[in-house]
Amino acid sequence: MSTFQAPKGTYDLIPPDSATYLAVREAIAAPLRNSGYGYVETPGFENVELFARGVGESTDIVTKEMYAFETKGGDRLALRPEGTASVLRAALEANLHKVGNLPVKLWYSGSYYRYERPQKGRYRHFSQVGAEAIGAEDPALDAELIILADQAYRSLGLRNFRILLNSLGDKECRPVYRAALQDFLRGLDLDEDTLRRAEINPLRVLDDKRESVQKQLTGAPLLRDYLCDACKAYHEEVRELITAAGVSFEDDPKLVRGLDYYTRTTFEFVHDGLGSQSAVGGGGRYDGLSEMIGGPALPSVGWALGVDRTVLALEAEGVELALPAATSVFAVPLGEEARRVLFGKVTELRKVGIAADFSYGGKGLKGAMKNANRSGARYALVAGERDLADGVVQLKDMESGEQVSIGVNEIVAELESRLG
Image 1 (cartoon, rainbow, N blue to C red):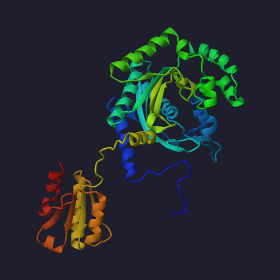
Image 2 (cartoon, rainbow, N blue to C red):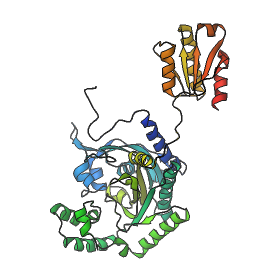
Image 3 (cartoon, rainbow, N blue to C red):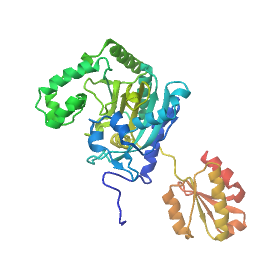
Image 4 (cartoon, rainbow, N blue to C red):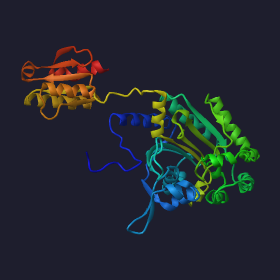
């Protein structure tokens, strides 16, 4: 047993489970790469103010969950709790909005960090794949991102997820709703922290998961009743485009995301097989975020999908991904000359794209064949001094047990033919 363990609320990804996580990331990214989104990678930590301004000082993420620290040089930094603010910062810093067509379309994958009570589906270190379309206000762009996320989940074999959809209005209509909601909340029996939050950002109270709070919110004014004509028309077009694409969704007038920067379109992907942590991803439009962090006006929209929770959703539905074999061919040399020859052939197989491995450590035949079995390889290449003297090796089909002799110089061509 090692002296050290992974910190509380974190996890290690190790084989064979790690192959599923890689496959999930690839499946989520594939539709994005097909739709003009380029890959972006940002640092694991940023200036604290980036998240305080962008995510919102009243959010639990900033007030309770962010890992913040001061460097030896006196800089205040934080491990990134989410991806959007970092990606937008990177795009602005590189002037991507000035050098090409808008929107700037970006996708990313990485680890994020929040200090919260660990439980299944909620970790202090978690993995997300996200997408952002920066610099265009267009209902088709909102619809595109929702459709691409739906496509990604369906390509994985998921079926029992739901898409919740709402509009949070804009700077014209939301202040009127905000005032009406604050008046309603002031009449409730809420604790001091919640009342304080209601004064800063009352929509955050709607997102409070406590039953004692939710019971009192019955009859709260709904934002949809306060939307201006422009926001109503915008939202209706998003709904029509998604529907025309054959993507099902549910209108949820109480849906608010836990970040302050969202405007107009907001959505969430939920899976009822995950218990209390049912959200597997979500996002929305954030037209004012660029200005919040010191940039120009750049209306934008994006989402982030949780890799960890997507894997849990697959398990809940009993979906097993068809993963490529980690090893197709396993070479078993018997003797020094065989080690030299088969090691060279393994290298050749890898060069032509065949997954091949080698019995290291000078094991005998019995031990080496056990390793070949454990590797999951379809074929084993076995050779001793007598085989090489005859210019052949033994090729064993690990499924059928059939074994044939093939010429040393025919190994690559034969395996390419058999493995397709």
